[in-house]
Image (tube, helix red, strand yellow):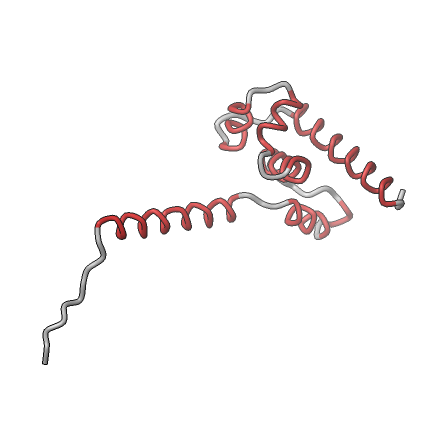
Length: 124
């Protein structure tokens, strides 16, 4: 019987596998940490007496920003607010509190966009 050796993965293959594993873990953590707009709407539907959901201002800002601007929402939101994108990231990380004026502005913009979309499709 001939001797066959089982080859070990190369250093490059091990590094690539480790990198892919870290990326997958990071993406999973991000998905768990950031509630989507759909999650916020679902929570709002479960509140007693139709009260607004008790949502962290940063989570609400994240959800509204993602709905309004898409994947690269932090930069777009920062430009519209006249803030530095780093400040948006500070708010999201919890390093600084989100000012009430920012949340109020984001809510107003979301309502305006919703009205525009409804008008466009003939619902309003």
